[in-house]
Image 1 (cartoon, rainbow, N blue to C red):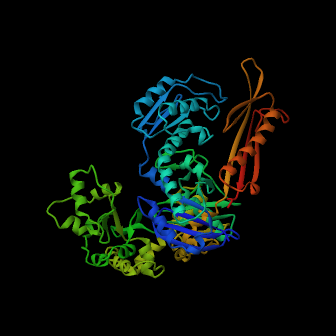
Image 2: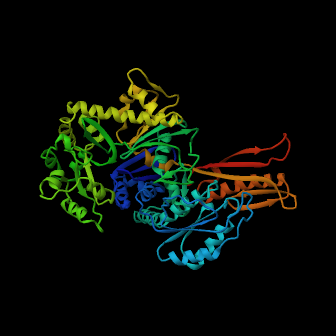
Image 3: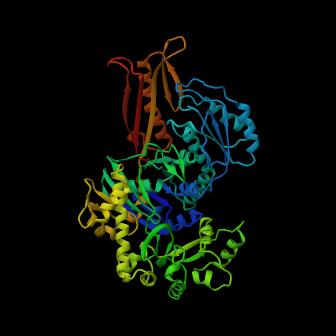
Length: 640
């Protein structure tokens, strides 16, 4: 008997799951707390909880991770030199530290517009090579002719030997600057991805598992490890993509909407006939517009671990994530007693960081380059949960609570507080951790809302359910302002939204919210078995999906002879007539799909390829099209 293992490393938990290859049945699963900044320890702990009888027969391991997303959001990528070739408009707030713009580029037919200024390239490379670890290159209309990008890549490697990422290698969409951004971020991630993948491979080998390693991409497909190493940018948002694929597998549905409630956020996406909808403009992450084809999703910063805080008698949820009180009481001995003895701030002093249920603890990251006030504040916070009383009130020196934000952003301290997960513990809907701590926290907060702590938790639970519906309807009704949708949700006594397709819930104790959802959503709501590890399921059952686009354009040479140009990931090719170009394109598209499947280790015998063709003509039917776009979509299953 052979098995596959899925791992989802990120969020609050790292999930692992074993699936039987013969019928896709889930055999075992486990959750462990995610470890930051080194994810490997959490992965080890998660695998340790699986039944060893299955591990020896695991032949494939597939991983989804938040590593790329978090690296970009936290600005922790390796330094990269960015070279833009052509006439660019650079944004005022350019986020790249080392960049230059040089002369060169091509036109939309792939003809050279301006000669490449290689001397300027060489001068920039010599200037920054000791300050960067890789280079990224994007040339104007390189999707029509990548010659300038390839020439620069070869020269940089001659001078430095460093990795070089070209824009045309990652996207064939229009938008040279956005391709440059994508290449830049990808180059930042290569060393980090290499270290992560190597550590996973070593862990698999250490356990005596003879298994192939795959990674999940942000479009819900799996990719071979070689491409994962070359294009780590494609793993951004692979967590939500894993949830989507996992929800489909667990529910047995090819068409459904999926609501994934994680620790930090709630994500909504949709599958139609087994394929996710992709964002047409490319994914936006950390303020960067990329050309990465990620699933389209609606996201809000409200999850199970979002901070619940009170101000002016109003309940606020999020956007920041904290360690739930119930979890802290298990992880830190003595915390429950500290919580019960906490000082009660005055109503006028309440803010996000000043709450009777707010505590802080060091993350273990070494502090450096702190200002005097930051250092003073950091010194007061220990390796055990520290109350606001210990930080602010037992001293003669006054420090602003706002300084805590700076230490949190620098990942030096982590906050503990009341969360929706605590509210579920109070109500008895979920008891995975220490309910006594959750109840103690709710009783501390109730005095600020003039409501019983049970009613307080019911309101929190209802607010989370409303947010789930708001995300869902904002996704479905993408042209309707979110404020208008919210008005209907808040008047749920008289109105309901109706969904024509099933809605699958994934993540943690999502089943606790089904009754609240049904009050404002008329839909077939499904919570499948193993929904709490749906991401890990998605990582292992993801299909191999390869999209190949080929463009054929009819034009004239300078001497007015008709030319037929073909543009693909291999560059520009010229043909004497349109039928010849079309025949070649149909053959090349299928060949590129199959080459990808073989490289990814997917079963070539099971690959299904569909081709769509769109012609643009300027005159009557029967003439040669001015432009023909062919799109090939190949779908294959991982080969064990």
